Length: 62
Image (cartoon, rainbow, N blue to C red; front, side, top):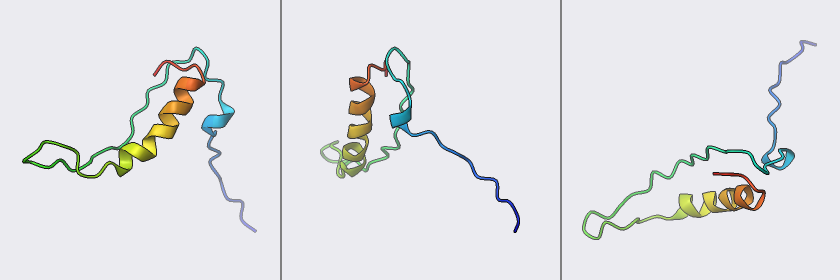
């Protein structure tokens, strides 16, 4: 059987965050209503919020 190279990704839970500077760049390309200039769909913002909270509560500088 042929060996498969696998990439091991470290989970955010496996990293000591205290004192680390973290660049957090979520993809939040959300549509904006041209009339009101308000975000129409907040789904991506809501999905990114727990990660941001985890980083901040872990002591990271974001």
